[in-house]
Length: 297
Image 1 (cartoon, rainbow, N blue to C red):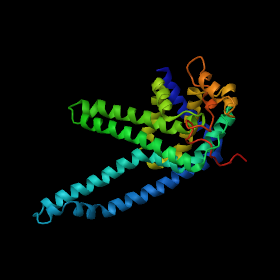
Image 2 (image 1 turned 45 degrees about the vertical axis):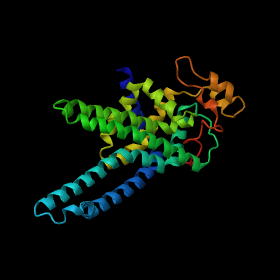
Image 3 (image 1 turned 90 degrees about the vertical axis):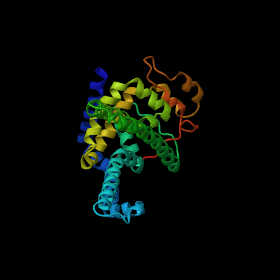
């Protein structure tokens, strides 16, 4: 329970950080606003064209008598709209992080600077950052979909499907939301996705305490826009707990002692203090780090 409380604490600390840095709060909302406009436009188009889509998908019902044709196509159109809405909820954070990669990289960097012990920035091309970011987000999305299918099937179980399954859904979504939000800060520390997942599983209470409340908050798109900068800031603070940057890690970032630091950079308590020592020039470090917008002046 201590880790759960700590995760909730990081959520509030992140919101408090952006409240104390108002221009960074506004700066961090830009990608979420862009993504929201795109999603709203897509949903409006889906609603407008859902009837035509249902007609196209059910040519066999052209000769059906009323009311069966209308019931079938109306149900299909409603399913398409609801499915699109659920997909937008699941993918909104990943798309926002992808769109806002340079923005959130800068925000993470600023949080690290104000807290002390910021990792060195590796030199990674923007196209490579976006490519790996999209790949990692797709990997997380596939995991979420797989778990969602299982939970959907469990929803048909009497009692359990109406009580336990929704709770499990929020918890699973919270874990993967934390994975997505912390990815920016952890990638800055040279930690690949597989290791990020392992780190967060080892501190599951911390991940759930941070992510589960955000899942409920992010069900409201407008609140997502307002809370996203603080969520990224809080995830950066959480990442500092999971993988603090030590002095040796920062030296290793220059690339001179990469092999030595990569082997010996783990801190005594299991936190990966030396991940910065993997450097930004090898194949391990091909993600989100290294491209940022200088907004500090």
